[in-house]
Length: 277
Ligand code: HPA
Image (cartoon, rainbow, N blue to C red):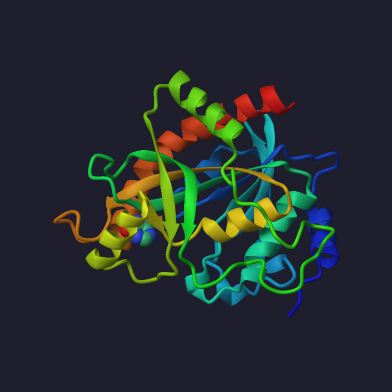
């Protein structure tokens, strides 16, 4: 099914408070949704209410698009992301990112859980993503191109906006939260990687591995949205530790990362608002 953005926005506009103009979109990864609880005057739209987003493909209660204020800055937040491993189409992910764009946000702040391939960056640490390797089996821009959204061939130089990276570093310094930096590689999942895959990814120059982020970044860059991304490290990647990797561990250490992100993201948004107006 082809999703018509006009129909999508008709639904979104019905919920949108008068005069609401988000400065930033926010995508919250696994175990990081407590950040959404910081949003004041929230208006929530269940993904199921959005045309084209089938109810079966989403997590249930956590799948909400939330509009409101974070640190007095208007944001639109995707609480509960869609993953390709759920059988979700690229189109569904595109719809969500396009809503952020159509509401007028020029910045997308992405958070995610990830495994670290750097032994010194352990569970509970934050890593700012500076570049990525797309190891998903495809690209969300395959198919006819809508020139009104963006060009056929999209540059991925500076996919992770250098100015936003500077603002993130100064926000983290101001509140004393250590921030590592690295390259993210995406896998389809849902199985975790083998130790051999991790050794290969390391040799390619990747520092963190996860099952999301990359489609969202490509879609955002196609439509000219500037992207910042911080991963909450939930485990050392396969073969690097005696601990077995599990979703439960991801949620537990994601919560530790979330406590840091709850401080870092509002501080970052304040910087963004000061610089970009
Ligand atoms: N691999 C893939 N995705 C992940 C991991 C991992 O080790 N940790 C959290 N998300």
